Image (cartoon, rainbow, N blue to C red; front, side, top):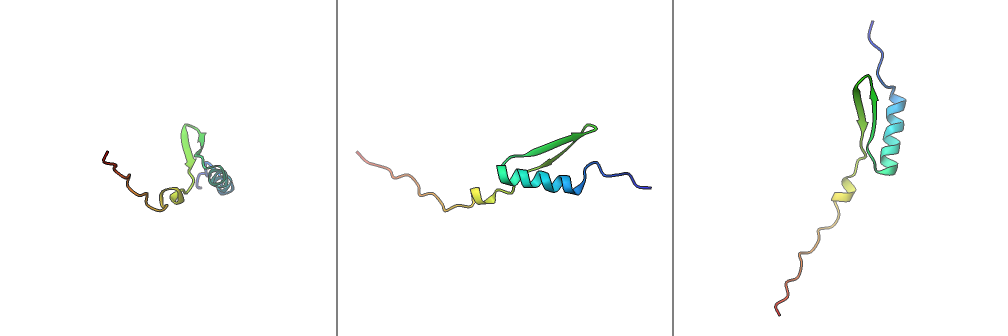
Length: 58
């Protein structure tokens, strides 16, 4: 007989929805084991490149 899962798939999906909506990391601890879900945030880091600063010669 196999052991039951520490957390249900529906709970993980609910945590992922919160993480994505609010942009936070969600953690749950069960019997000393931590399970976490982080948002997928590649959009923040994939924007247009920033132009280098203009150097002024006074």
